[in-house]
Length: 90
Image (tube, rainbow, N blue to C red; front, side):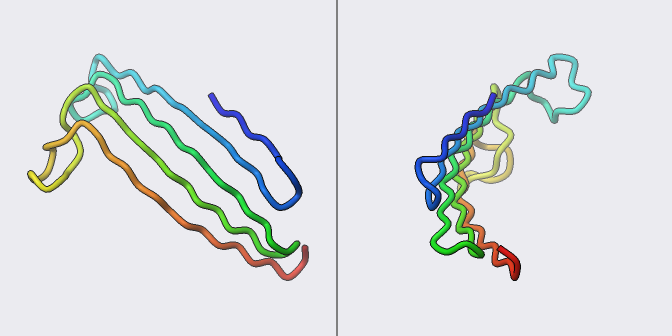
């Protein structure tokens, strides 16, 4: 499920959620379900530059993510990614 909105030419927001269910373990590594959520902020200060900030959260039904406790010691994971796109033809 995804929803995006253009607030103005220079600012856009989007939210996306996903649910992966794998009770038989065909593609997962020991989890039955995994949920993700992403919030994106897209800023276009000039026509040929896009700045995009993606904030992503994931949650599984079992500990599959690494944290300070070691590999496969957390049910949650969070990341933030900043992307920059510069084009020569806006």
